[in-house]
Length: 110
Length: 114
Image 1 (cartoon, rainbow over the protein chains, first blue to last red):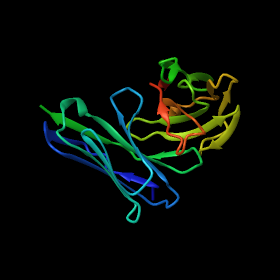
Image 2: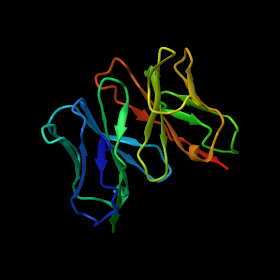
Image 3: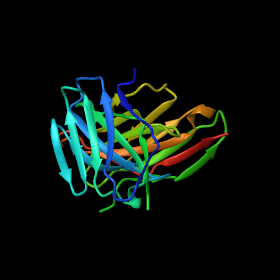
Image 4: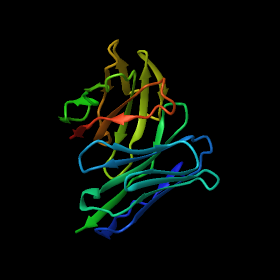
């Protein structure tokens, strides 16, 4: 079993839709939870970072962490074609090593 | 403020050869991590360097080695290349003093082994 599971998709939605991306994990030692966005043939770009259970909002993006269920989510409101990318969840503890999910490919159609 | 930079952007090698990839961290960062990303997969942690020492290592063979210089820049060396080493190699920088050590990635070096 992988430490971090993420549905690879692809996920296709119309412009303006609310997108929900999810990851589950098995390692209780994870303390930090991140979402990265990666455009084709580019490096991952940090979108959201949190270390506690609950919600964190930044513009159209909301990150949600449920440590008791070992489940994290990223919600994108009013999705735009420019949001089309691969979204990677990542988790870490104080070792410096990040464990990534496989990534979910999102396409937002105009 | 320059972000994380990597060189070269692309590289083609043949089996058995050796390769060196380079990374300059974001200004103010002292820690460099290297990841390998195969097509369609998430990045896999190779190792992390801090104060010129390897701080943590992932499940990669000894063919993968690294170095960090006094200016915090870093190199990744891969010996005896084989076809399975073809991937995007990502460098990430962070500050050990920052809680959670948020990592910022460079654009990557795409390596193709023929």
